[in-house]
Length: 152
Image 1 (spheres, helix red, strand yellow):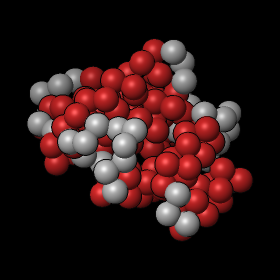
Image 2 (cartoon, rainbow, N blue to C red):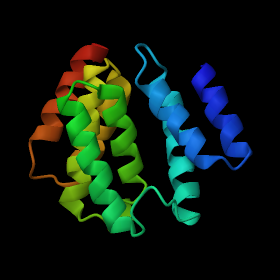
Image 3 (tube, rainbow, N blue to C red):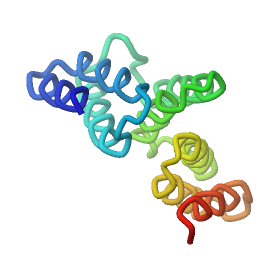
């Protein structure tokens, strides 16, 4: 919880980049309360985007692509908390996504949640992904995996 407090304090002091770095580090920790981090990640991305963060691409579309790519690469490296962080940042720009592109990001974040045994979050993302692209079966598989973890 120290990382959440640190990030919250940095946000309140308009140190958005510092807050984001704290969140990324905290989300990478084992047993971090990831669901508590998600609103702060979105708040940081909103602040950084409105302030034209010099360390990220200027346009929402470019940011979206960079964040999706980082989410995928960190997932492949087994850094599931980091993957959740990057997919959450990309979802802030969901208005720039096509329907099935949003489904892909939600499904990928659901997979990362599953890897961290966060079944409730995984189920919510998987079902949202299925709503965005009803013909794609993978989100339903992830929803079933989450349901099994929840013993539903």
